[in-house]
Image 1 (cartoon, one colour):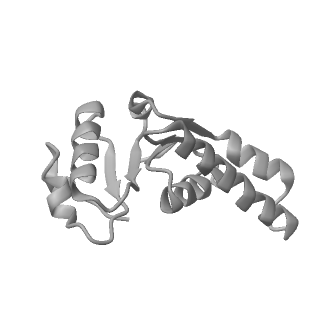
Image 2 (cartoon, one colour; image 1 turned 45 degrees about the vertical axis):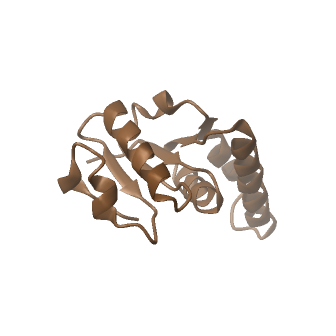
Length: 139
């Protein structure tokens, strides 16, 4: 399977890091969060991190600009419809994660890989809130 469009739900520390690294690979990234303020903070963090890499000569300014340009920041879950892979990186609250996965399951095609960046919640429990519990994944 080839991945060209990658989604991230939750743009806190883990989510913005995932979006940044994926953006650096040249993939089209959709970063979704519940508030524009969260998205603005994530974008500023990513830009700051990339600027640090430019300063250390790990990448050029053009590469940093290109990475940020690959990321769409939005509060609209519908923007995730065309993603082949979506990583949930929301807060470690089971009810929130279950709600997100239910919504992603209803929104996306069965071929879409839904993954979680959880450290404390059973991936089996999360997957049970989808119509595809046999296709669970954790990152």
